[in-house]
Image 1 (cartoon, rainbow, N blue to C red):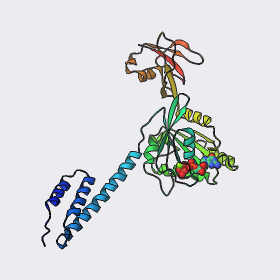
Image 2: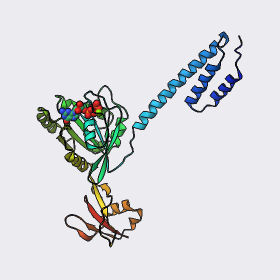
Image 3: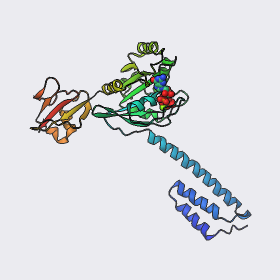
Image 4: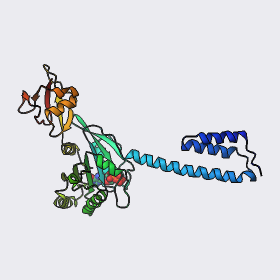
Length: 323
Ligand SMILES: Nc1nc2c(ncn2[C@@H]2O[C@H](COP(=O)(O)OP(=O)(O)OP(=O)(O)O)[C@@H](O)[C@H]2O)c(=O)[nH]1
Ligand SMILES: [Mg+2]
């Protein structure tokens, strides 16, 4: 039986053939299906169109899922450093990030409330540090995009729940998962894969069984983490924790001063600990590769003395650069 297709149908077919995206193609196919005369002679064609639509739907869904997880596997760095919080479900990651930053990460009594990475900026004195809250990590399911995020971050905070009896297992489980992804928390210097700094924080130390649990962690993992300590997200005043995060990042703040003018405190240059005068000068402006000399002020020994290009700077030093 002839199909007797209308000119509108042929027009839609042309649109389909010229369509560049999956959604345009799907739209054109739907149009063809809608305007096609429905009788025995077009049954087969109707079936073909439906199959094409469903295949294209599947492909485009897969693409968008992949796109989303690709885009979650990188977060542009902002501020003085990027710190990622990881841990098993319900240990208090979101509670902690909500205390330290402006982020609005849902805190719930039930686990797995955090479904995507959430970024917040933590103010510490005159700088800001970027913190990332993450979906929980478990043996049964861990979001793949967490591995590149962890690898790229400048520092990791592993949080465990001291109110649970299984604190050792919590650390083991997470380090095992990371190791199996070629990331070793314990030997990251050798692997060169992980940020070098990792804090282990036992949360919920308002529970009576918390202290002995913390002591066991310190005994067993003392050498594997930059530092191990406990907090209670319910009782924290956050100042100490912010300071510890800043110190663990191993960065310094250096201020600059115009020659011949009194010091006006501006935004500091945030540099790696161990940076020298020359490195800071280049960070200030590339022309300072020709730096002739610099003068230094600090809170202790210096009040404008000349320092060499290779002089190592400390946090809060003030530099006057001369070309
Ligand atoms: N007693 C006590 N409860 C806490 C503490 N920190 C967090 N909680 C509670 O523990 C529960 C889980 O906290 P969340 O911050 O949502 O935990 P999470 O690690 O983000 O968990 P998911 O993202 O849901 O997997 C909430 O009911 C918090 O109020 C703490 O220090 N002490
Ligand atoms: Mg959470």
